[in-house]
Every structure is written in structure tokens, then in C-alpha cells.
Amino acid sequence: MNVDEIDRKHPERVWLWDRERLRGWQLASLNRQFAAILPGNRFYRDKLGKAELRLKSLDELSTLPFTTKQELVASAIE
Image (cartoon, rainbow, N blue to C red; front, side):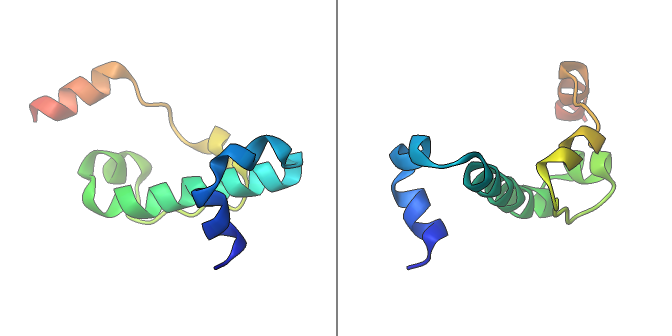
């Protein structure tokens, strides 16, 4: 069992982590979400312009476009 698997099984220990470890875990979790969601979600795939997205840093979040409520409602109607 690797450290990431242990962390997912025991998230209550997160408050013990230093900032670097926490940011690494957040980045890995976010990239897992992108990998799970983008291939099957046309709205975000079109909005982000790609079916695969892997961030190298949490700082890259600022380069992604915002999503508004109006966009989500409009996409649900289509």
C-alpha cells in the first residue's frame, strides 16, 4: 500500500501534514478528478478544450476559466 492509498483511507490525519505534503495531496486529488470527469463530460471537455488535463502545480488553477451558474444551466438545457 502506497502513501497516497493510506492518505485516502485516513484523511483525518491531514491536519498533521506540512504545507508541501498537503499541496501535493491536493494536486494529486485534483488530477484524479480531472482524469475521471473530463473524458465523459462534454461541457467541461469543451470549456477546457481538452479531454485530458494534468496540472503540474496548484498555481495553474488560476489559468483555468471560471464556470458560471448560467453556463451550467444552459448546458443542462442543451
